[in-house]
Image (cartoon, rainbow, N blue to C red; front, side, top):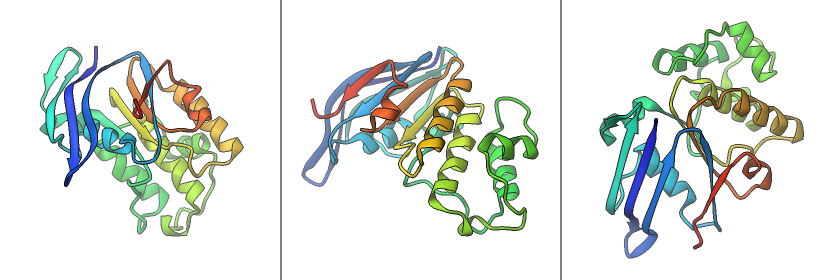
Length: 204
């Protein structure tokens, strides 16, 4: 069992509260959707769940395989794909995959050729990522995060740069790799939210 528990959690920037008095539990075997208007705290909550941001007050606790994990070590168990994360643009795709899997191995053995087939992109091995389109980069980020052997998967606006075919690809890839993971998707896109079995509206 993997679990994240928030107790009376709040986040403030200056005098403005972005999140206030939020108590909620996230557990494995579920896909949670976080919705809300712009500025409601969706991305802020994802960053807090990942351990990247600290709450202003309240408490956040983690369990992975029923073991308590400190916030300082939760990054070892989390995969994140978001508009504010990025690939290493100076790398080629083979270099990016090798670098990523050194720290976050895939959940199953996949050759580079198989990874190319999964992301449905065939590119020259010497082409650096700064020459890729936004949609291509988004697919690579999503595939690296979703395929990683991590019990917690956090996705912020996952289909923001994807066309209709790539959105279908994303849904299928996520379903194929959901296993017993704890998955949280921050989005207002109904296509993303179709995948979720529980919703948290940050406007309320």
